[in-house]
Image (cartoon, rainbow, N blue to C red; front, side, top):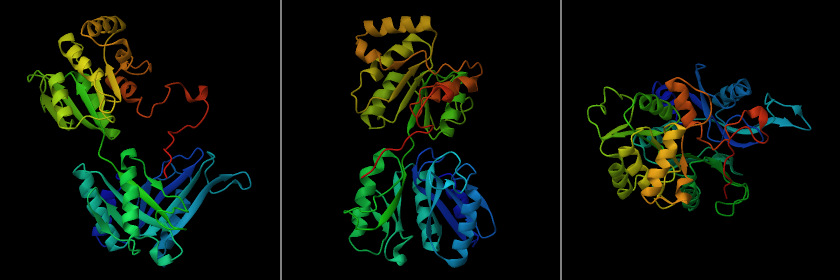
Length: 374
């Protein structure tokens, strides 16, 4: 959803009536995860996608009707055994979509959410999508770690919704509460859209590939940092797109980042410097961090010969074989890439933990599966 918020708010700022359609639940081989959204303006402007094209036309009609009637609705699209091919989802998945006309108050809440996103602050927005009292449907709360803005109109239920949102923020996954949740009340469902801070991609080594890797990483939602101890090469002119440039020895930089709490299990570390005096101290430090703060992916660039030499140096520096198993080197998947872009894609292709095999040779879900929520 975060990609469409600027356009949505811009349309509302011009006095245009706006409807929002959000995927709130999926099952089977659904093409988009919960939280995916599109908006439709009264003038027919559309931004975003909820199914890759399968059901957009039907959702457009629902949105136009919502704007005319001023009502919210929860719609289900998919493929069932009893229904053969329903509205368009030939992939076999099922999606539930909440379609709503946004009030000025709603737009103001989303404007506040966008400000949090731009400041890289974690925030969630909770929307009641089902309730026996139709007047409650569509009400929203913006939930932060220390505050709630907006109200469900249901008294202490606000705190219960906020508690659920805060407990699930670490997953970074948007979700719908259970229909019979004792915590928030029988027969009420709330969709909680989580906007987590961007995970970090730390690139060590001011080489040409680093610029492309940072660009691809940013496209995938990473906050990018380039670290190199050589000020001659580590310049904004050479790397205009990275979020942060750090002219520092990489191992010292990592130590400082751990000290201030900016390294966690969402962090990705790609060591591209290809120079033992940078590589070895950096990898010794990263590979031996405690589990709760060690980057989830630690990769190092180099040939197989370089890798063997690097392993020997790391062992001599005291890194145990168990820790060495965490190192991904040579870095990247075997995609037979040659260009900088192809190489960068092979590096970030690990993002959702896929096998790297052709889909025609695998079984099971085609898309990453969301975690379950209470």
